[in-house]
Image (cartoon, rainbow, N blue to C red; front, side, top):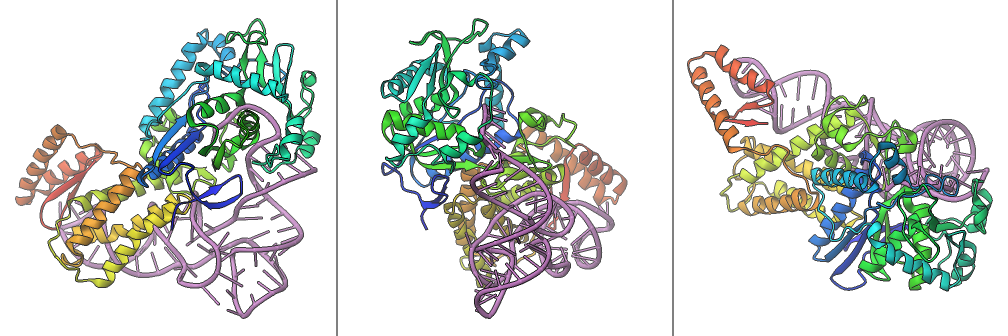
Length: 498
RNA sequence: GGUCCUGUGGCCGAGUGGCUAGGCAGAGCUCUGCAAAAGCUCCUACAGCGGUUCGAAUCCGCUCGGGACCUCCA
């Protein structure tokens, strides 16, 4: 089975076919760096990191573009016409750029912790003001935008009338009908500049107190939110590219507006496949600023938050996210995170065991087992091909764990599996656990620490030989308090895990 | 109000017609000086009510519950 991708545009799974053989253009909406990233933000970046990794594994040369929104948006369009970033900067007495830098750094730090590969290009909105202005001019020239008092708005109704004929109606992505929307759109203040309620800003006039501002043909101002993604995706991926990703909450209006802008400028819908990850919820409700229920990533990693029973390692968060299919909601909870923590440890421990297995048998003595193992391993590719079903991949890997551990602990005959099957399993699990899912061992082994522990292990061995269990247990228990767990193996050796 | 999604065992979650994932927790057993780890076994669910079907968690309808978007939001 070849790769199947669920396309939000068609609402069904489709066989993935890149526009140019061997190449894939992937655009993912990045963060607005006016605040610190929270758990919810981790989801798209982990999700699309795996998409990126898997496409690369399939042999595609992927250009992964993920923007940084550093120009700020309106708090409430039309009403406050105020740049989020400059507002906060004033409050904190910081330069906007300083604020942007701070949160960009924190974001990059969090991405690194989560083991997300950095994108090929990470363009910033402020670095592409010229491109955005050019695009707006083009839209005005074509008659789909109009300037009022130094601001420019996209004429949604005119666009819809003309482009519906071309199969690109406004609402095609989110399944909305413009007429319905015009009736139900909330009545916001200060909408008088717009011809229609559904129109959205391409450029906003900057009031005097506004710090972030650029010169434009319409006066000093700043770009609207949606235009940056259209400008940057076009610049780096072309008029039409393969995959556009982002959170489900961006589907409307953000992505819908992107399609409209790009369609006017490039005469086609920008992306072939639209992928949207679902939300992370907390007590069943979406985690988001508006709900005041966010847990920042730094808080999650440190455990410093009233809702957290403990700190959670970034790898635990990654694993937690991957255990669910990306299109399902994922509910946060200490119990769930703790289950992930233990599960991840079990998985990684088994994987480490597998790497060290020494098998010499040329032939598997247990044919049934061998076939079962091969089936589980071969299904891994199928599951990934089925719209990146990481949950199923992990389930199969867990099914391999008892076999691996039984071989290690000699609970299974040494020659149950052949050296070829073991090698295949080693190769497959490396590929899936490390390369595709991007999971890694939380506990790096430090040779000095290892040496110290070995000394203690030897002292304990001596004590045990003398049946001095008080001393041996003391060593074991005190190490356990430090998080070092000793394990007496069957063959008399002692291993430990951190 | 409009559009759409969803309701799975103590918890988190796969799953689109028959083969009833997986993780965590819980119980028993094996191993062990005692533990831990590991292994084995058990606990077997699909909101409710109808319908379609030889057969439904899976399709259809209704009821009840939860949520997302329609405003910045991953």
